[in-house]
Amino acid sequence: MTLDPAAAPLEIDPLLDDRATRIIVCCGSGGVGKTTTAAALGVRAAERGRKVVVLTIDPARRLAQSMGIDSLDNTPRQVKGIEGPGELHAMMLDMKRTFDEIVEAHADGQRARAILENPFYQSLSAGFAGTQEYMAMEKLGQLRARDEWDLIVVDTPPSRSALDFLDAPKRLGSFLDGKFIRLLMAPAKMGGRAGMKFLNAGMSMMTGTLGKLLGGQFLRDVQTFVTAMDTMFGGFRTRADATYRLLQAPGTAFLVVAAPERDALREAAYFVERLAAEEMPLAGLVLNRVHGSGAARLSAERARAAAENLEEGRIVDQMAGKAHGRGSAAPDGFSPEAAEAHEAVEAAVHHSPDPTAPASPPSEPPPTSAPSDPSASSDPSAVSTSGQTSVTSVEQLTAGLLRLHAERMQVLAREERTRDRFTALHPEVAVAEVAALPGDVHDLAGLRAIGDRLANGRATT
Image 1: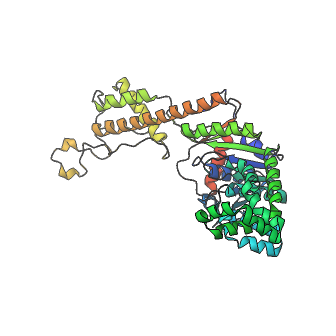
Image 2 (image 1 turned 135 degrees about the vertical axis):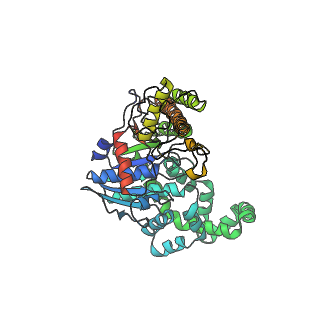
Image 3 (image 1 turned 30 degrees about the horizontal axis):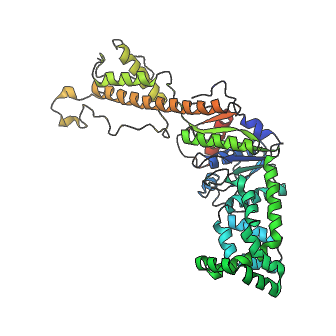
């Protein structure tokens, strides 16, 4: 499958080479290859001369494995084996550690200890809804402020919505400015006995009800946390707003990553529209794991018809018992259908479907007419001689390959229709197609291969 000429190609190398590009954000639904794409971009940019750090929030730790690092944590670690003038560093967001660092940096020693030891804070920092997205924003802001790298590649969180991180500052602000938080902060602001009197009089009903549901100790932990964090709340909002503006700045580029599947591209269309509404700079769409075929001129219909002809025994191979070598022409005496089948087999031999294709293999291997043990047969004519194959075996193998080819062509057609629907809705979005690899990416060589396909921008075989 190749790009429609009407769809603008996404130029990856100019994007990576542009020194004005300081942040690339890879977003998309789960399971479409965001982490691999982010890592491949980092490797390619480093080998083209950039000093890059890749920030991933993917808990699968595939990034560390592919880069030959035992483990990633909240500290950027240099990746060895980069073949070029640049540098590549990689890190994995530690949500709780990032929150702890913020507390330690913006509170004095005694108050910081009180916050870090508070049970409510420990629950909040370890898994409160939206905390991971907000901390990803915080870490991005920290990396950019250090100005140590000239390119930051961000792999967005694997959350229910891959754009939740855009809402994190707003959600945090709503939480900090909410009525419940203000009520909890009020006694501390009033101070001393007056504060306790206010708490007992103004909140007795609420605390009594919540105390039954959540427990009185929980409410006390929350109030202690809010009181200790009071002076830091403004800083959270300020930094979150600053990072949000950074994402809108000209030096940032968003790449939406999708698979050539209906649900993934529907999500991609939502991301594109949301990014436009938020005035975020979109560079384009990376269409991942696109399938191809080296025998695309043989349609699914013709391949299936030829397979049926073979299976029904309507093709007579006048070269019975002879095995034909690779690259040979169809022997004389073949019917048109047999010649076409022969051509398809030759193409299938040289361009076998990659293992990632969703095409289903036959449930059982085709039977052969020749026994596996020649001595077990009483009919010498049923046994193939050395270097020869029975006509039945050739026809069955050919029919099976033709059916696999037909299934592959159906996959290609479906992917093309799905992509064309997206490009028709969003013709302004540049697209790069990344051909599927035959196996999983587990090292730098695999990431380079993905980078080559990203730069090529089209699905090839």
